[in-house]
Length: 542
Image (cartoon, rainbow, N blue to C red; front, side):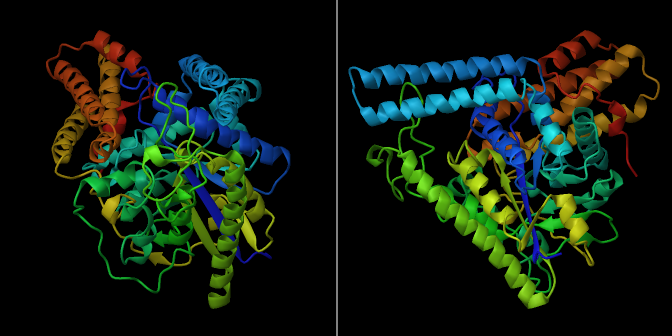
C-alpha cells in the first residue's frame, strides 16, 4: 500500500442509566443527543453522501444504547428541545427589547438554529431511530461499532469470573440484538485492564480492544491518566491526593505504533497514542482550551444558554468576553490542519525509523465533541477530511487496522486505566472502597443463585432474570466515578443503594421460597433494560 501507516480514531459514548430519573431527569441523555451524538451522526452522513474517504470506530456502552433504543426517548427528547428552543426565543425577545444587545441576540438565534437543526435531522433523516442510523453507517462500511461491557462496569475490580462473563456477554447480546451482527472490537470501560480480560474477550470472539499507552510501554502515566484533561476525570486530581499510582519501568522495545497479542490470547490490542490524544483532550494544552472557543462552564442564569468564550487562562466568569463563532471558525481550520499534519508526522517518522507501517490509535469520550467542546464536531469534520485525502495516511476502523498491520509479537500488558494515576484510584479510594465490598457480596450471591436454580419455574426464572439485571446495574462503574469526581455524589449513592436493595429483595424472596414475581416485573418496568437477560450467564466459570 502507498500509505506509510494507519490512523484509527475511536470515539466512546457513555451516559449512566438516567431514563425516567428525577435527579436531572434525563437531561444528561438529552444534552448528549442534542450537542454530541446527533451533530456527530449528521456530520458522518454528510461525509458519506460526499463519498469522503473517512473511516472510524464508534463505541457506545450497552446501557446507553438501551436508553437510546427505548420508544419513550424520542418524545422526551422533543420536549427537551422544545424547552431549549423556548429559552432561546425568550432570550431573543429580551435582547431585542429591554436589554437590547445585537451580538447577544445573534448568539441566541445561532443557538436556536442549532437546536432546530438537530431535531430536524433526528426526525427527518433518522426518522427518530438513532440506532437505525448507526446501523446504516456501519453497513455502509464507513464506521465500525465497537461493543462494551453491559453497564460500563469497571472490569479490573470485578472479583468473579462469572460477573466478568455476564458483563461482557450481556453487552454482546445487546449489541447483536440492536445491530444484527457480532462485533469485532471491544471498548474496555475507561480503558480499565487487568490480566486475563483478553482471554474472556477472545472467548467471546472479540478481535481487538483498546488500552492506554502506558499499559503497553510502561513509564509514567500519560494523557488522561495525568488528570490534566477536560471533564470529570480532571476533577479527581483536584479533589484527592491520588494514591494507587501506576508505576512500571519504561519498555523501550515496545511501541503504540504496533498491534500486539497478549500471552496466548488471540485478541489483539491497540495502545492509545499519547501525543495525538492529549492534543485534543488536554485541559490546558489541548485545542478545546483555545481562548476563542466557546466556554463550557459559564451559562446565562435563566436560559442556561452559552454566550461567552474561554477568553484566557484562569479567567473568572465575570471577566469572560462574548463568544464570536467566526473567530472560532478560523481556529477550527488551524487546529484541524495542525492535527492532520501531526498524524502524518507520527506515521512518517515511524516509517523512516523502522521501514514498516505503523498505527496511530487515538480514543476520546464522544461527549467531548459538541457538548463539552462546542466546536469539536466541526473540528472533527475538517480533520477527517484533511487526513482522508492525505495519501500517506490510511484511515481505518480498528478491525481494518489489525488486518492491514497484524500483530507479530505477544506481550504482557500492564494493569492500567485512563483514570487519575493510571490505575484504579478513580473507582477505588477512601470514599468508594465500601462499595466494592457490597459489589463482591452481591457477585457471590448472584453466582450462587445461578448455580442453584437449574430448572426454575416461570416465576422463579422471571425473578432470577431481574436479579441478574440488578446485579449488572449495581456493578456500574459510574457510581464510584460520580462520587470521586463530585459531579453527582448523592445521586450515585442513591442509585447504588437502590439497585443493592432491589437485588437483595429478589434474592431473599428466592432464598425463602416466596418468589415475588410481581416485584420483579415492577423493577423491570422501572429500568426496562436487557430484555433478553439470562441469569445463567452468572453461573460459576472455571
